[in-house]
Structures are given as structure tokens and as C-alpha cells.
Image (spheres, rainbow, N blue to C red):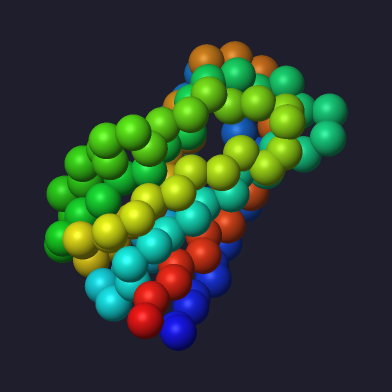
Length: 109
């Protein structure tokens, strides 16, 4: 089994705004899990989602890979049968301020 771990977002976000995280090359992986952690005391509201791309330029939302931001940590989004080259997280905040970290783990055979 092969695995890859990367921090894709690690910053303070103030809403309203949209933040695109760094991309992760997942070409040879079958499963990707992304954990979204909001720092204690954070007040950010909004959504987090995952997008995929075959060229690291044009991005499309992954169906069923969107969740509501919560101070309950961590918030996890899992994608199986990854059939793309790149994945990235996107945070869309509506209000508040928080430091958010998005950590991805990709697994393959």
C-alpha cells in the first residue's frame, strides 16, 4: 500500500470569502480523505467541499463531497474510486473568523 499526506489549507479565514486550497496529485491513488479542523474559539460559518481536475487548471465540484463548517472537529470528507489527477479543498465562508487546517491523506495499492 502507498500513501501520501499533505496540508492543503492552513490559514485564518474571515467571511465572507472563498479560499481555494493547494492541489494534491492523486493520479495513482484510490481513496482520498480530507480532514477540516477549525481552531478552538473559531466563529466561521459556511461550507467546505472538494473539487477535482485532470489538468490542475479547470476544477469541478465532486458530487457528494460538500459539508457544512462546524466547530466539531475534525470534519471529514472521503472520496473513493478517485478517477482524476488532482484534488483540492475549497472553503466558502459566509461570516466569522477562524483558522482552518485541511489535511489530506491519499491511499493506493
